[in-house]
Length: 294
Image 1 (cartoon, rainbow, N blue to C red):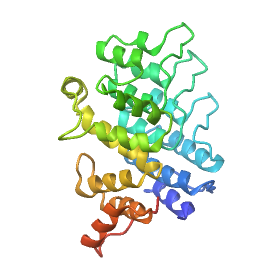
Image 2: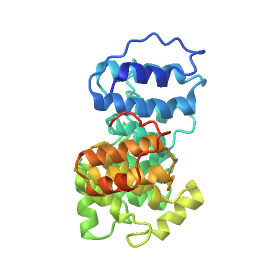
Image 3: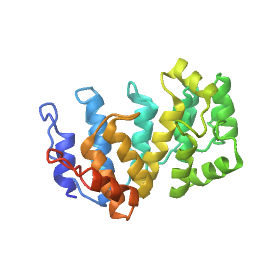
Image 4: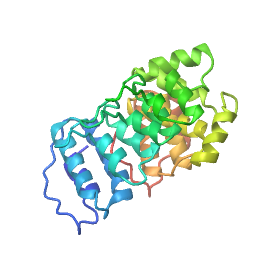
């Protein structure tokens, strides 16, 4: 895909409050595609906010340098900036940032708090779970010698951080898949998603009810989708197909037909039989413009 036009288009609409004269390099198609997705999310949430120029600067620097963990003059990555400065920086947004490859284990110049420390301070189980899923380390200490588990007063979150794995993955097979997944094994990512099954697989009523009561969401459903997104982003064809179906019908996530068909086509190109059969039976409607290739 041509990232020069698409990312500028995403970042600069409407182009009334920000001068968009930056020429963006395209170090890799994959990074460009990920930044387009992230920029759409950030502009939807924060365009017109005082923080938007800083966000735009992060995005252009990451794009031009090819370094997802690019740091500003204060030494903060985009992940750190979002968790410190942005209102409503939730687990969904952090997940989207981590998908471009930002390290989850930076330490700030002042305080040496990692993002996992900050999630613990906020008693945000969902945020901590997402950070751990991308390889965040629960044993890093701040300049006062405190681990993230020592900064939360919520018993479920404290248990999560002490174990560095979710309590709901109780079987040996599930835990083995989790360990491989957080270390980047793509097939294991798709396998972990399968443990968060709506009907026949694992369902943690205890943890889900806590998240519904205190954080307004079903953790099992959100985790399933999040793991599918991680696996799909790394090219796992079945994850691409499954995520595409969810996105096509708006099941557990916002409906986006263009993006959905792009995911299903990507799976088909890898020889995925489910995707091939689906496209035979459900041809792409003429009024659907396919999103940029993955």
